[in-house]
Length: 191
Ligand code: HEM
Image (cartoon, rainbow, N blue to C red; front, side, top):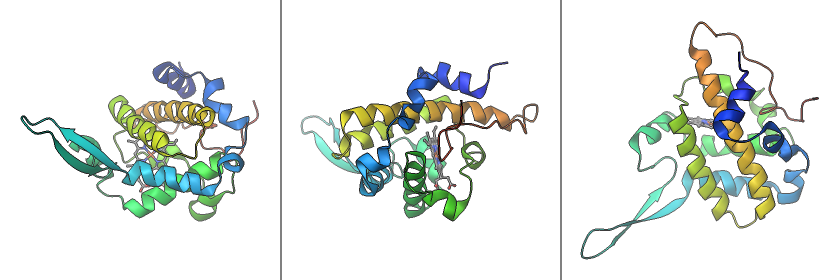
């Protein structure tokens, strides 16, 4: 049977070595705390200019992401979350996973990403939409250099599909089989 890691690689198109290239440099030291705060704020709260092509005059609309996503099915996944909490949860996790202090675990315990996403429908489609917003957030965060951006996106893409694979564990037949993984480790796991 394929492991969750194998499924994550296959579905994301990102090999494990590329996903965990974030462990080869200390991105927290390189980018600093504020960059991670800006990234997660942008991911959840960024203002997006949407041009509606209504003839004869194009209309400009401002939308905020992810909480005001134009796709209702995706927006509804976050309906029970508070924006400020979601931003903090996310950047504290990223900081700790990318070489910084264990802010997330000190406040909330082990990240246990699959377990914490259990209430949500983490489908292939949801992963692609999440990644779409994350790509835009990365692109709008000026303080992230191109190489770090690629490393981070590979990690995010692999993790997103790891979570999709983990969603299958909701099936009673596979329940309880949550494996150890490098996605949520504070330090890279030993090979
Ligand atoms: C939390 C959805 C992918 C890391 C959440 C929450 C939702 C959600 C609805 C609750 C918001 C909150 O209150 O914090 C999704 C969906 C994904 C996805 C639909 C699509 C695949 C990811 C990825 C990562 C991630 C790729 C990491 C790289 C987190 C973390 C939290 C979180 C750290 C906070 C958990 C907590 O403290 O409860 N996600 N997520 N998520 N997500 Fe995701």
